[in-house]
Length: 198
Image (cartoon, rainbow, N blue to C red; front, side, top):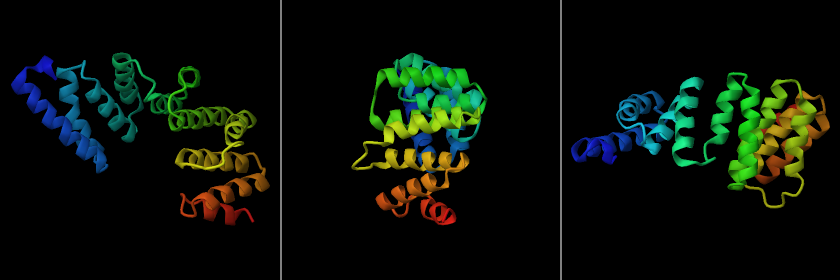
């Protein structure tokens, strides 16, 4: 944080490190308190704006998270936090913004796990608006060819199973929860959800 000068920059870097440790320990209010003054003093510090935005997100402060994560996006020109940003907009019922962020993320085609997270948020936005068939279609298309599931595949399948259950298709919901269990028997509460549908 060169803009703050050597002495203040060093102190800010120490605070950023402390904030990162607090965030890792899920002490999000502590992280927020450490980061906010740095973000105000050095608004061009992308890593500060990103971590502050994520702290606000974990605290459920959607508008504050949007402000910080949008600043991060503008500073770095990345889609890295688009799923989180979209989820904040979804929480505020701003579904048009969710769709715009999903389109940007999909067009950019970054890492598969990042696209999967964005897809999950987009499906949730569709479901929020009563468009369960569209939500299911969005997730089911990307699940078809998974042969060696990773965590993002399991998260996506779990959400898909939940959507099937919401839509009243208990057989498919049970099948998807069992698919998740077969890949990772301890994943979330998939075993309990599958058992409840038998």
